[in-house]
Amino acid sequence: MDNGDLMSASLVDASLELDVNATELTYDGELSIDTLLSEALHTIRKHMGMDAAFISEFSDGMRIFRHLDCNENAPPLEVGDSDPLDQSYCQRVVDGRLPEVIHDASVLPEALDLTATKELPVRAHISVPIYLSDGRIYGTFCCFSTRHHRNLNKRDLNVMKMFADFSGKQIERYLTYRYQDRIFRKRIQSVITEKRFASFFQPIFRISDQRILGYEALTRFSAEPIRPPNVWFSEAEEVGLQEELELAAIESALDHFHQLPVDAYLALNVSPATIKKQKLHGILRRFPLNRLVLEITEHASIDDYGQLLESLAPLRDKGLALAVDDAGAGYSTFTHILELNPDIIKLDRSLILNIHENQKSRALAAALVKFADETGSKIIAEGIENKEELETLAEINVRKAQGFYLGRPMPIDRLFRH
Image 1 (spheres, rainbow, N blue to C red):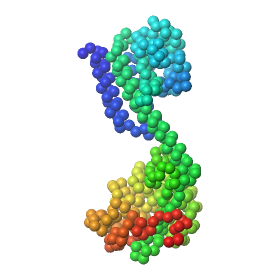
Image 2: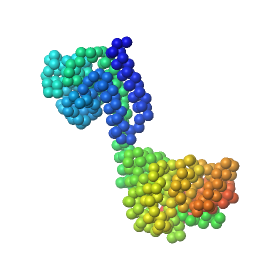
Image 3: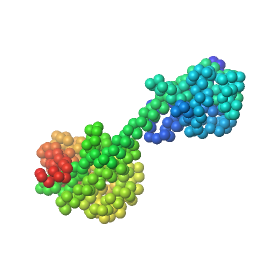
Image 4: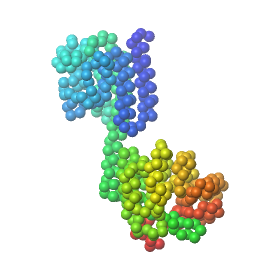
C-alpha cells in the first residue's frame, strides 16, 4: 500500500467515526454543528497537507464562508466572510470551468482570471459541491494551499466527495432543525400573545369528609394542533420560551384567585428553571403566599438543589408551600423529595391505578405515607378514578386526594355550579 492509499484509508476511518458521532448529535445550538464540521475540515486539511479547508454556502449571488479550518500559513479568512460567487473558485468548479482537482492554479488561464489566485495566492485547490437531498447545491467543500501540490489525485477527490456528502447530510439536518425551531417558536409566541389557552381548576379533597381544601390550576390549550398540555410546555422549553409560557399560564390562573373560596389554596405547576426567576417571585408576592403552592412539574431535572432552595427561601418564609409531583413515578422524584423537603408529596397516577388490586403499589404508597408523617410533609394522591382506589388510599392513611372520580378540572365559571 503506497502513501496515497494509507492517507485515503485513514480519511475513510475518520469519516466513519464522525458519522457514528453524528447519529448521536442533537442540535441544541450552533456549537454542535460547528464542532462536527470543524473536525471534518481539520481532518481532511491535515491529511491532504493543505493550508485551509472550508465549507461555503451559495446565497444570493455570494459565496459565504460558513465553516473554516486553517493553519498558520493560511491567508486571513473568517467565518462569515463573503465575496461575489462568480469571482470564486467554487462557482467555476461547479460550472465545470475549472477542474475539481487543481495541482497548480498559476498555469490555468481560467484560474489566473480570479483575484484569489494572485492575492492569496491560491495554488493547489480541490473542491466538490455539497448537495442537499432535493438536488440543490448548498455550496462547496474545499481545500487550498498557497503552494502547488502535485500529489493530489482521484483517490483524494473521492475522499473529498465522501466528506462533502457527510457534511451535506449534517447541514441539512441542521437546516431542518433551524426551520422547525422557527416554526415552533412562532407557534408558541402566538399562543402566548393571543392567549390561546385557558385555566382549569381541579379540586383537592380531604378524604374523610369530602371537603375541598384547594385547587390545582391546569392549562388547557385551544391552539392547533390539538395535543396534551405537557407537549406544549415541552415545545416551549425546546425553543427557549418555557419561562414565558409558564408565567403566562400562572398569571392566567392567578387572575381567578379571588374567585376561589377564601379558605382554599391554589397549586401552580412550574419548572425549576422558572422558579429561580425573579419575575415569578414578583407575580406571586401580589397574592397571599400562605394560600399558594408551587408544584415542581413532572420529571423536571434539577441541577442545583441548593440554589433552588435559596431562591425559594424568602417566599417559603412567608407561607408559600412547595409540592413534589409524581412521587413514585421514578427515581428522580425521590431525589426531589429528599433534597427539597417539600410541604406536599403528590403520589403519581401510575402508583394509584388499581392500587386496590396491586400489593406492590399499596406497599410503596404506604411507605411514602409513613415517610411524610415522619418528615412533616403532607400526602396527596392524584388521579383517583374509582371508589375502590379511594377506599384503599384511606385505609393506608392517605388523607387528601384529587382525580376525576372526585372532581374534574373545570373553568372557573363552571366550577361552582356543581
